[in-house]
Every structure is written in structure tokens, then in C-alpha cells.
Length: 228
Image 1 (cartoon, rainbow, N blue to C red):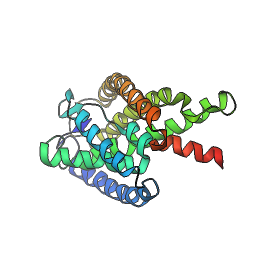
Image 2: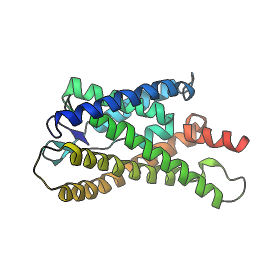
Image 3: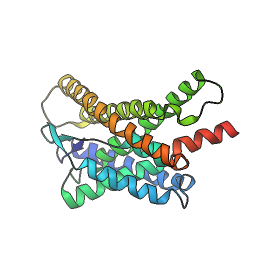
Image 4: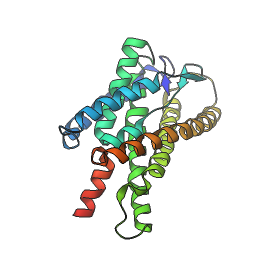
């Protein structure tokens, strides 16, 4: 979701802006371990794809719009740190060039979509893929359940990102709408968005995994763990 200016107070915006800058600095350092000459072009394609799908917005609350996030998609394909950077770059471009999301709300938007959404989606993907491989036949390929993993990861990541907005609203929201109403509406709306995002993420990740499984970060990581 994109927050516009004035949804939370200035103090809250500054705090989450500082948090976003610090976290992205860590991501920039750690992304070096995720990228190589084969995956750098894929990261660019992922950012471009997410930019395109995020441009389709629809209103949820006054000053807040809903759309596909792409956090789990980015994390599964290019890694969580690189994925967070891809989402953050998209959000900065949208805010500064297209007025999609407020400039003062950039820190909260990055926190929700680039940090929380990516982290929750990737953590879900890692845990679920491990569980499914453990229940499968011995020696089963890591990509056997990649579609299911991608769907659930995208759904969880989307809902968690929406709950990040609720936390920020609790801390410094300036509107008079009750917290219970905001939380219930954001949760219900983003479960539906998450289902749509899960389908798109599953189809996209599965298509890439069938053609070039060596480019899917999650599968590479799993194969390295099996080899070790």
C-alpha cells in the first residue's frame, strides 16, 4: 500500500525514515553476496516488473492506496537483501517522479513494503520450503513445491506489510478513525490482495524456475544447503 503525506505525524515519519535508511544501508552491503554477473540483469528485470504492477492502484482508505507489492517475488528470485533494494528503488521513483506515495511518507512506505513485506515473505518461503521438502521423498528436487511456497509467501508478506501500516498508525496516526476499524479493514483487504499477489508470484516464479532454476535465489540456496 502507498501512504500519502499526513497520514502519520512528522515525528513518526522521521523515525521510520531513519529506520529505512539504516536498514537499506545494511541491505546494500549484504546484497553483494547475493548478486553475481548472472543475477544482476535479473534484479533489474524484477525491479521493472514490480514497478509496472505497482502502478495499478486502487483506494483503500483516505490517503492510502492498495496494489500488488512484489516483496516475496523479489526475495525468492534475487534474495531478500537485493529484493528489499529493488522495492525501495521502485518506491523512490514512484514517489519523486509520479507522486505515488508521499515524500514524507517514503520512510514508512519503504519500511512496510521493502523491509517488512520482503522479510516476512522470504522467511515464510524458507520455512515452508524446508517443511515441504522434509515431508517429501528423499532426494526430491528443491523446486518441487516452488509454486505453493511462492503463493503462501506472497500472501503472508502482503498481510504483514499491511499490518506494518497499522503499527505506524497506532504510533502516530493523525486521523480520527478507530484503530480497530483500520486494522480490520487493512487485514481483510490485504488478504484479498495477497491472494491475487500469490497467484501472480507463483506463476512468475514457477515460470523462471522451469527455464532457469539456477537464477532463482531460493533454489540456489537450498541446493547449496543440500550439497553441504
